[in-house]
Amino acid sequence: MLAACSSASVASSRLAAQTPSRPARRTPVVHTPHPKPPKPTATKSSSPKPPIHAAYPNIPSADFPRHALTPGVSLSVTRARICVSGYASGARDVSDAEKTAVYARYDVAWVPYAHEVDHLISLELGGSNVIRNLWPERYAGAWGARTNDVLENRLHELVCAGQLALASAQRQEASDWVVAYRRYVGSPPSTSSASVGPSPGGFYASSYPTASTIYCADDSAWHELSPTYLLHFATFDQAKARFPDYHLHQPC
Image (tube, rainbow, N blue to C red; front, side, top):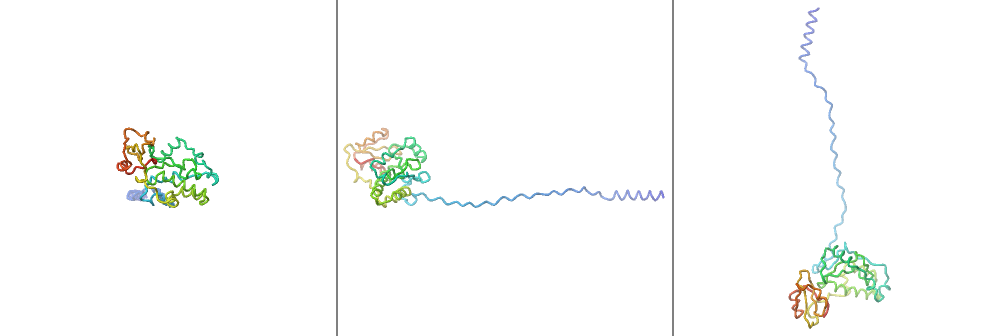
């Protein structure tokens, strides 16, 4: 019996030695899938409207306001009120600080007699003095500030004569003043020498890079020009030959 037990023990030991040990069972690692990024939501964006001057390749963009900055603002006034003599001059109230702000908004440098801070909806048609109705309108060119003044006067005449509704006149000024000018006035005035009278003392102009104006000798405005750049011409034709893009400040 002892021999049998010994043989069994030896056999068990050998069997244990030959049986490979099982590795410890590992707990399976559960990998959480990466969340998918959300699909981009389509946003409706209206394409920006082309600038108003895009329809006029022959008219510089400087002759139009930026409607994002100057959409035009009018007051709650009646036709009877604006047709009272002296209304526009009495309603004008734009401080120098506000004018400076207008130039800054448009990133335009102030140069004497190069621009005027104008009302998009004119005062004589009930325009407001707030900055969203103001823009730096240049004098130079056939479509400059003086041409716009002609339109303002014409629209005022039509409104006060009962031939045009005040709201319509305001809307046309604010949307496209060049279209309104062509509709109610016609072609812009010529700046040729034929429309310029004689000036006994000749004409003055500045050669400063941003200058754009010719002055009759009896126009006191030229006295404010810097002597460093001041030039004198015997005739208007000579001045225009030197500065063909310049305009006359006021009739002689």
